[in-house]
Length: 199
Image 1 (cartoon, helix red, strand yellow):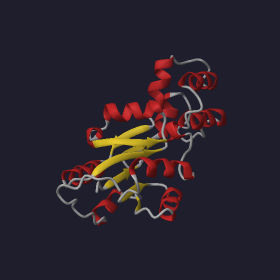
Image 2 (image 1 turned 120 degrees about the vertical axis):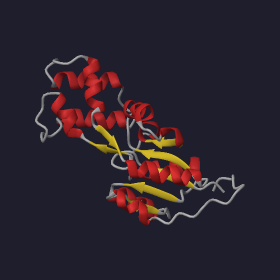
Image 3 (image 1 turned 120 degrees about the horizontal axis):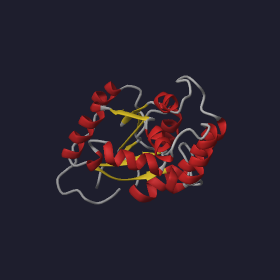
Image 4 (image 1 turned 30 degrees about the horizontal axis):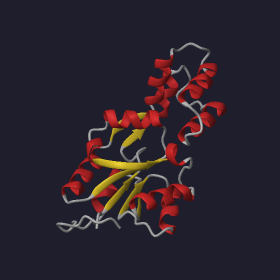
């Protein structure tokens, strides 16, 4: 039986730094994201809006001051430094025979950045993403899509309490990632040699 670790991305793999994005676009670091921009990002993360549509909205709200490449670069500044503790934890579990998969509300653009820049992306074997399912956690469709593809994971890490609660209601072993130190407290048993069937 394959033992699966389901892994959120934001604030679990990398720190989220939306203030860097806002500052690079000329907004105050503590400014609220314009409502139309936030709604379009949500649609893009659900696979319901193209990057072109998102760029058009962003151009309007930034006074046409930036090139499309600058806008894309600013959007990727939301993704900050990776969490070394997560990297070490996952490498250790993969060495023990675990399979790690992403389970994330994200856009295709941010996922591309993750695969290019995350040092441990090479040990992550696939995933379930909001832009593919048309839903976001804690909506049931996300969890259903994961279970259909991978079964119930042995461990699920996420920084959002509402997502953890939804997972626990489905019988998942879900751990709230509110600090990297939580990883040291997670008992995860070694996978037995030769186990290769999915749950």
